[in-house]
Length: 400
Image 1 (cartoon, one colour):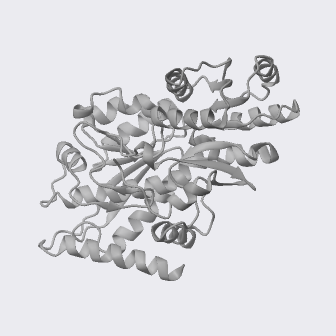
Image 2 (cartoon, helix red, strand yellow):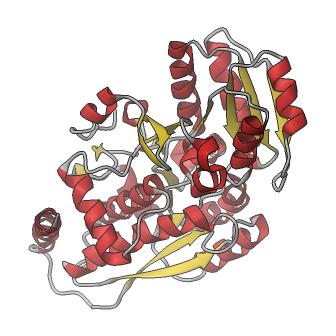
């Protein structure tokens, strides 16, 4: 593993030194980049891995010279997973002189702050929040929001296709009443309709609910043979434990949030076998991923709580740097950085995927359906649901 880490750093060093060769010496004044997310409170389980992914990339970039000799400096804002706090912290970032920002995990929090970034012409890269409206609310050519996360509009069809292959077509939906739940429910129902299906039962519930036994009984009575859950917190575990207590042996499936500790640790044995869409699974299936996992362990001395989010945040940071390197005069107005992100000149060989012009004037979503795999909870961790996906991940997928 040490040799893999040295390989990764050597490759990065060569790339950044080549980018800097033709450039004259510049001031060593730091280049400020904002990071915003839930770094305290209930959503911190996935907010902290996002922050750590950014920090890991920034440390590597600074170790090889930063931008033209200028180190990157992070301006970190904790949105606490709260809509209004997130709005306030976004206003603070817009006034902090950052060239761009990376962040948001909660769709509702991000939606509340979109206007701030748009008005300030401050580019924002989202590596965590999956709600489809984030990149659909503002017309793409005008939007300053870029995403490196599989939006629900591609996660839902991917999971539904898998359900159909398995013969699990009598779907009970359990969705929370947040912005994430609202948007996810719309996308899931559209995916079911596209396959000629409709849910046999739908339950909506508020965050903080601790008992859904009656709703689970109703779903069982309706003849459901699979539960699709749409929520981010411990409520996923409430569903799993409630199903187990009823001795109702049906699978639980969903988007990437079923890979969160809230679910896997909270549900314990009841989480086993759950299936979810993933872009990254924490197994050293190729050199890039092995190097990333080794570097993360080396820097933070801990397992990654939500590997997919950390990997996407790491790649988001490098994609931002690739864009900034195309700005040769160091003048980073919002429109200039936006155009740079829409026209990244080099292919980035990332951890999640190989990105060739991941964004454009008309497209603000970097993740494409071919990058998704089905993850499965097994032995208290997420692994590949299908052996063929594990084999396919020996070769990192390319956006298309």
